[in-house]
Image 1 (cartoon, rainbow, N blue to C red):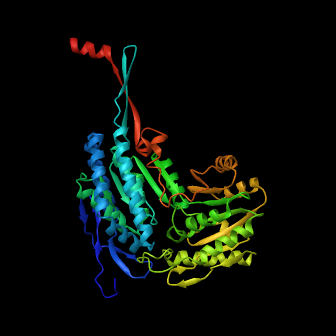
Image 2 (cartoon, rainbow, N blue to C red):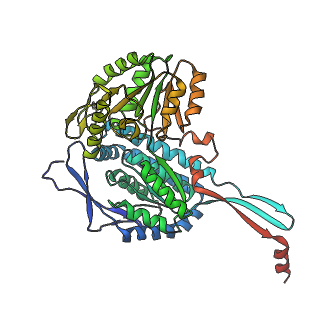
Image 3 (tube, rainbow, N blue to C red):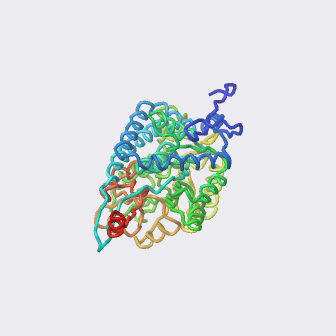
Length: 482
């Protein structure tokens, strides 16, 4: 988009219609610095409208059979297949991630919807009936009710699907509040739900640059059954406290330390390949599935760091819409400044930049490896998102395990070792939700496909509750006789 072109208007999707409110906020392409869209800036009135519409939709959607819900979800996935190219381009324009990554994100979102569609059928189990004296007890599952979902910017399509699709599969309407940095992917995906016949009020998108107002309304209304959140740890902790005060269910996925651990007996060349991939090739290190610290046995540290530097030097930064680009821009100038400050602080405290460590113009930053980092440095203690890899050396595994869990766990960890038994033992000790052993893992790995192994209803089970109906049979017979 050129500076002289008219900026398109994008509108919130509330109660099945586009809400054309006059207030807007801009969405900026990080790669060019140009405004690519003006989006509806919803306030308290729109939040209340969305809640009311979701509550109106709750009963009919709850009564819809799981077969109907499953069919709608499959149609939604098929429509996303048809529009995958357009959706991926939208993701690249609003996030700056390379187009190849955006395409993979959309592909994984499609796969996730299909898995949730299958799980939907498993929620419709027959009521379990038992008799206890004069009472008949029925145990059944019920949807938790309207869900308010708040998501971050780095995977706008996949995070939308991961928070919306299982709730819809369970019979819960959803109000989605996407990140103001990247709301276009969520709006596009929601429009496809409407296009395949998603009932009015079952999926609404409340766009706003005032997250506090929206969150406050979600917390205050007792009819909202759950608040779901993907994003920063500080905000997640605040929401958890508010939900506890309101006795409201909360589902959190917050950022944190994502360690890549290399033991002395690992295949160092393969480990280096995987490390570069999971650190720099996932939205320039800004993805919620990116490794953000390397813990390496001091006996092999020099070898591994050299191998990583060679591979990092070959990475291609550039235009995110160019299929050859591997590393795109940072999302905003604040992130750029934080990385600069963290590197400067670490160097002043004895760390050494072995490659990168400089701006490349605009919001681009050279993929950076910084060695001889120690616990207590700001680069370790504070969260960071970007193409930045701090290297921490350790002498004993116990020492490393303590370091790798001291600043708040993220979602995943990676372990490279020649001893699979020892690696599995360490994985248990670290305590991360997802641990990849001698494997880079998937860039947009989700449990949608694998969770059925652990429970019959998988992720969808988070959005249902068991209920009991007790009937006094003698009283019923007496009433009939009268």
